[in-house]
Each structure stands twice: as C-alpha cells, then as structure tokens.
Amino acid sequence: MNSEMRRQPEAIAEAIRAADSIAICSHINPDGDTIGCALAMRLGLLALGKKPSVFCEDKIPDNLAMLPGVETFRNPSDCGEAFDLFLAVDVSDPARLGTGRSLMERCAHTAQIDHHPTNPLFAETNSVDGYAPAASVLVYEQLRQMGVPMTREIAMCLYTGMSTDTGNFSFSATSAEVFSIMSELMRAGLPLSELSRILFRERSREQLRLLGRAIEHLRFAGGGRIAVMTLSRQDFLDCGALNEHADTIVNYGLETVGTQMAVLAREDEPGMIKFSLRSKSPQRIDDVAKSLGGGGHPQASGITLAGTLREATAVVVAALEQKLETEK
Image 1 (cartoon, rainbow, N blue to C red):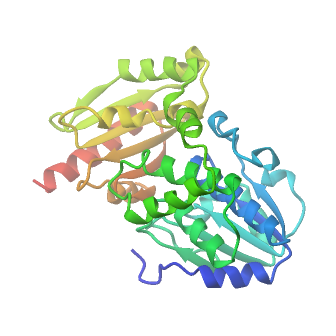
Image 2 (image 1 turned 135 degrees about the horizontal axis):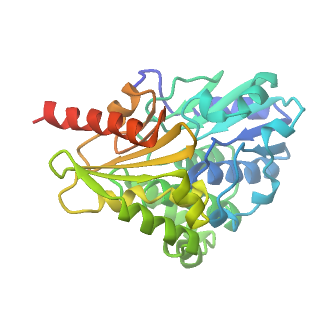
C-alpha cells in the first residue's frame, strides 16, 4: 500500500471551500458505495450552498433508484461544462472514471475520496484509506469535517454505501467504526428495514434467471478450493438480464463449503470478459488481479481481459491455482 495514502478530510474541505461548482463523479459499472458516496456528497454540498452535479457513465442499478437525488445523475459525455472542482468518489484509478476522465481534465482542480489500496493517488488532493471498509466511511468523515448536519436522506446514502461494500456488514474489513457511524444514521431516522429489504432480500426475475444459469455453469478448480462460474452474452440475452444483475452472483460460489476463492467470468461484450474475484480471509486475491491488469481489495477484486470466455477464464483460474500451490 502506498505510504502516502491517508485520510485528509481537511485538505478536501479546503478544496471544497475554494470552489463554487463541483462535479462529483462515480466509477463505471456503479455499485452502492460509489453511488451512495456521490449522492451523500451532493446533499452535503447543497447544504453548504455549493453547486454540485453528479456524474456516472453507466446506468444506475435499479435497486438504487430509491436513493434521494439519484435522478440528477448525468453522463459525463453529455456535459460540456467545466467546474471549479472535480471530486471522484470510490474510484480506484482514472480508467474507472470512463468518460468522466475528460471531464476531470477540464476542471480547474481535482480531488478524490477512496478506499482502494491500489489507488495511485491520481488527483491533486487525495483522501484515500486502503484499510477503510467502504468509501462511504470516508465521506461520512468528510461531511462531519465540514459541519454538515446528518439528515435522513444523507443517512440513506451512507448506509447504502457501507452495507453493500461490507456484504451487509459481514466481510472481514467491517470495523467498529462502521457500527459507530450506523448508530448516528439510525438516530437520523434511517429506514433500515425498508432499505435492507430492497438491497439484500429482493431480486428481479431476470436476476433469478441469471443466477440459475450461473449455478448451472458452476465448476470447481484447484482441488475444489476455487469455485468458477461463467456467463456468456447469450446467457444474458436468454434471461433478459443486464450486466448489473450479475453483480452479487460471485458470492454464491464463495459460500460453497471448502472453497477459498470464487470467480465469476461474464462476457460484457464480444471479446471482452469481466471477472469478479472473491476470497475468504485470510486468503487474498488482489495480488492476482493486479498481476493481470486489474485491482481492488484483498478479498474482492476485478479484472477485465480480452479474448473468448473460455480462454480468458482459463488464464485467471490458472493464476489462482498457481497462487494456491505456491502458498502450500
């Protein structure tokens, strides 16, 4: 982890105080943490009298439609404006900005709030903690630093980010700090039962069909220690599913008794295969992801490779098998 990586809420606050218009950008293929961060920051900046705008290149997942302000997201490619400050949230590297990268280059100043240990500190001002369980934890700290009062709406956004990035508070990175924050969110009127149901206990028919297809393709490698699932473009078409519907499927492989790692390979487009990697602590897979051009967290990482579904999956599985063998 970069020795210069640290939380710097005061430095971010200074950049915000000096700005009037602020572009907040989430990462491509958005999840609950990056969207929760962006919307919580938007509400906080509005409370401070700033002019924030939120951007994301890709479609916001349907299960996040309940978040306040989600309808204000714009595609960066549709924006010709320049802003006083560009703020990336939960973005591990510039490539994850998608077309937001060109927006960043037009802005007078840049900053970021993130929790990925592989982050290269690509902004002028960086508040990055690779040990934080969710970027939403850092956004909570940022809002407190700036004196923004906690509201029900901000609590909804922060809860969404923290809960989705910690596996509903079950991953090993989940900390006492998270539960301390949760107590404040509850006091602010967080509708916990309603949001928990939407995020973790409701699935669309398309998601269920796709899950069934992935489990149908399930196989094991590495002497049963690696669960491998694949989804072709045809699987998505047959199930009427979108890419977002595959986001949590990899966890089902990891839940199998005896596994240490899980892989979900999905054909996002012909010739491009996206991999979701998961592992059980203390086993880690971020080093394998990084060696193949990806990145992420010790127990949750991602890779994108060119090639056929079969060829690309073979490369990733071989790398994971090699790691298990060398660590015997």
